Image 1 (cartoon, rainbow, N blue to C red):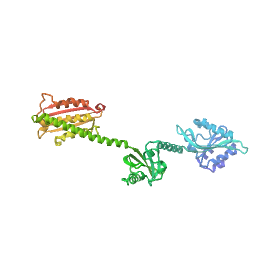
Image 2: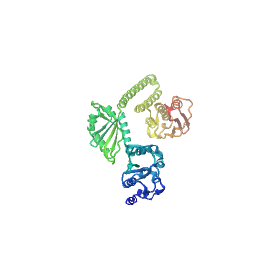
Image 3: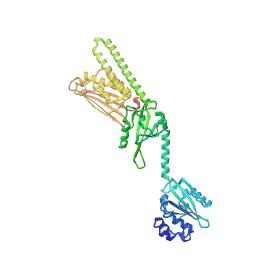
Image 4: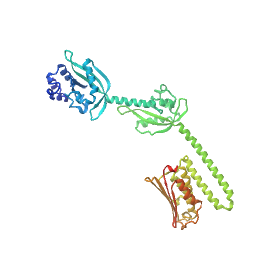
Length: 473
């Protein structure tokens, strides 16, 4: 035995040779059964992972290939009873070893799980195992020879694959794979439902089977981007159903790599957006009809007002017409945004464009306003601009107006300040007209905020403060 160890200069050979065996349960090496010494000599140079559990106490002897599989148990586990260092799995391991010793038969399994603490925490690991008896010339069993191969990584990979396969199979989205020749290599039930083809009808066929005739280069462009490593953002396009009809889809494309990182194909996820596209088309039609009808109503109201005021009250009629036009502009803004609101910048620009942009200084972040606020704020700013054109900064060539607004994240509110400069001296009005009521009362109520009109001698200042939260709706 000693001569055999000297011929094998491996780490484990040196450790075994240096161990104080007389103080161990197996006793001095020269007293070991010849079959055990021979098994150790065979195990040490082997590249397979081998551990021998010898004697009644199952004393551990193992080779260099096995040492990494037990982590921080090495090297203290060498020469010690297995129950001392395999404590956390002893209730699982001992019955296997006893079965070999008592039955004399080999015990084997593939991907067998064990709970082991080898890095400071208990983890589930997997091994292919073959446990065999080591017998002397009389057939007496002195030890168990355990040849193992850890398969933890393989099992984990198979379980990714299984979970992914289950996800792909059960997904309601259409998922397909294709190779570099753009031939279909994978096809899930979602793809069957979306495109109308069964799996056996499309496997191996060109993916261009699904591409409309007016998009002949779309797949070539996608594959070129994949091969160049270019990210392909989710985009909307159309694909062909088996029955020849066009399908609106949202398409995501990703590269498929092999184990060496080479691109071997592409995967595609398509989602049916036909319902949304139909709703958008209907919404555009309805918005167009709404815009048309609102304009007709406003035109009718203007015609009635013209007949009612007559030529005797041209000034009142002009003011009324201007307000109708301001209301129409606000409705146009909402129509363009599908009646989901508009930005504060677009509201301000819509008002000042009617009075000459060169006289205004505008500054502030883009904030989204709900529909009610768009209409009321547009009308209020129109009233301020009309008054400025009649009596304030816009009534003289030297006057100008600044409209500045800020957003305060801490308070979740915004403040807009309208300030006139360079105009005639301003006097405090003696009464309250429609414009003042609209600005101070209606606007404050619609914005759920505060509005202050300050008639400074140097020019009118209007301060608007309102929260930006759900209360607007």
